[in-house]
Length: 121
Image (cartoon, rainbow, N blue to C red):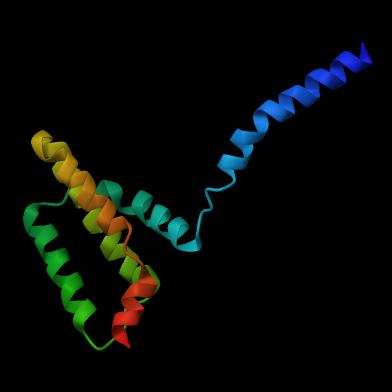
């Protein structure tokens, strides 16, 4: 009976190994955690934005991005995440533009603070 248990356990572990190995490849970065936290914090607020509020946010982001002062990581990601959330909203409002809105959302969420800092040098 004990040998049957050992063989069964070994087979289970052997068969389950590929899924464990694949799941460990997905590493969450510090930036990813910050973006996720900001996304959850601002989602409800941004989904209620009017086009005018979004345009003001968008303009403010590009204005601050072009200033000599450097945005903090949290400030930078707050802007990019909020713009990504608004893109998501547009996809929900206009079903025919959903794919484009998802692509735009992904582009904004994929922005990297280090790339921004590199442009400031």
